[in-house]
Image 1: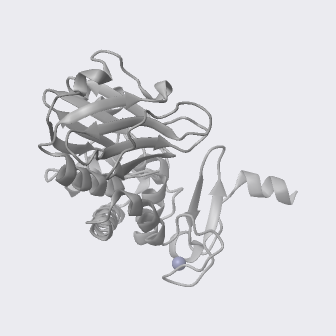
Image 2: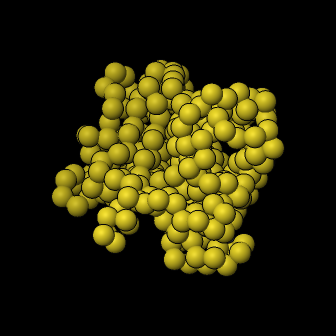
Length: 289
Ligand SMILES: [Zn+2]
């Protein structure tokens, strides 16, 4: 799933290509992706785009008084097209195309929103104000907000009895960090994902805050200037522990381990993060019985 750094890079990519352009046509193909009906998507045609901004993991394309808000979820993606085919797209079957936006101009350029997963998570909203999207309205502070400092971070964690891994990826606590970057941030901070947020010492909170900022900034730096199509591969390449089960930790050489849950998994380095002890994994212990 694209997280803050990828959506940030995508926002810059689209901003450079879309701002000031006029939308010629919007074609919804997979109706399930469309979460609003008033105003209709067709209302976007004839309007000028700008600005393009990000709210957490949501992409917000301003369109002259309206907003096309997109949440890419697990398997959604945006594909920029220099020349869109003239014939209308065919819905259904294995076609991953969910929505097509064509711009005015001789080239027929624009973009496709696609959904490759079986769990249809891609969500598209056309609203008058981005705050009308429930997921946007619920968002906690953004780590890149200039007002977001260590004291604010400390206040978010105070009294929080959940494990730090779950807290970091809770969008209503902190906007933009998901399963991948929370693994990365915890590895950089040399902290167990199972640690209770409220139990963090002042020094640990400061270390985690520093790791959060540096990890996200470095990821954005790596993604800057990349085309939309290259962002997913870049995200994967930049990972230290996430998605690297069984491979050596780039810091200490220990083997990266995994804990599996019903619909996700986390990765960590025992030497760097848990004092060398593997974390309990219910699935693994069941398999070993
Ligand atoms: Zn390590």
